Image (cartoon, rainbow, N blue to C red; front, side, top):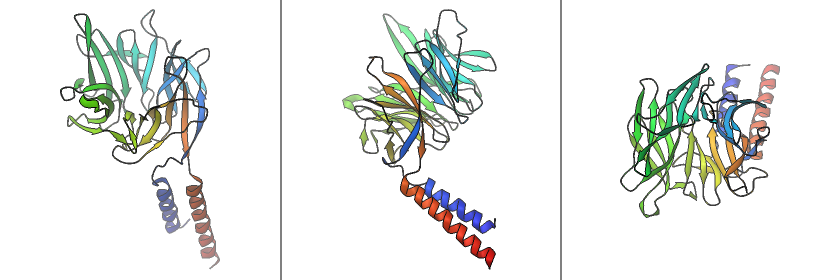
Length: 313
């Protein structure tokens, strides 16, 4: 194929794939239910399509239709994995311990002196881990959210202005950008992106036209998944830019976006009627809108005709 034709095809795909996210985009996929479990919660998915999650029976690795149950190294406690790297290393919690798991070895994570810790997410490369640690304070507990840089073992605690509180610090990418949500004074509730290296925040009260966003994961290119509004709707988009809602066939009530990989595969939780939050999960992938698909197919057909004419000449 001539170089000029190759460049034209690449340019055409770039136009279609860079089209703005809209509410009309279609999502397809499947519900994931762990065998024997009454609740299945997926937390993260890597570029190989492997997902991790938890159930009322314990935690698991889901790999293209196959479930592998994960055993806690602590007797009598359930293990829940909440993040997975591109190579299959995992983070999560068992008992009162946060952990990083790789090559059959568990490494405990958490701030020194904490009564309990949980690792919430891990970047694709495994360098950064987010989590929180609880500290006993008289009859109550205080919570500190943190980012661990595994390249040097340093923990960075994430604190907000006085009167503002971190609800969740969850997703993080390979550049050290972490996502979370917060509650502020005067009903100032929304989400943030925290730059670990600079120690700075960007705050967001809207996700497109939807209020009270809750960002939960972020890709290396800055694409965010989460949820917003009431009842909650799963969303995907770019902070400060456009967002779309993720419509899941069969979902009743609210939906929650939890994980995303670099290919744009999403994990969406279903808030069911059992009173315990999300108890079913959906792995969703996007398909082109009819107009975009027609544009792409029409463009490829035109390029094919042009190439045949050039060969005939």
